[in-house]
Length: 106
Image 1 (cartoon, rainbow, N blue to C red):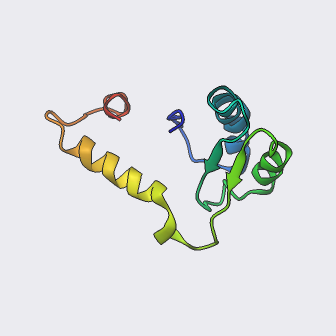
Image 2: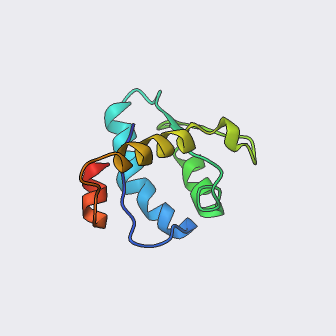
């Protein structure tokens, strides 16, 4: 698992592109210095944007990018992980009351 990045706004292709070099690339090069790391993401619009796709292609020698078939949420483990996290946080007592409490609980 890589770092959890908190966004204060909606994710766009350009915002996603600003995350990739600072967070994904540094994480993958440290943890998988042999270049054998595999990056997984879903087909959300920002993930499939031209700028993000181009960046991932340019850095394909640093780590592998696992490609999901289009419109295949049933194959996407990311949704299952998100649901499990939200369920676990929802069972906390007391429940998180602020966005920072929620982030801390995650």
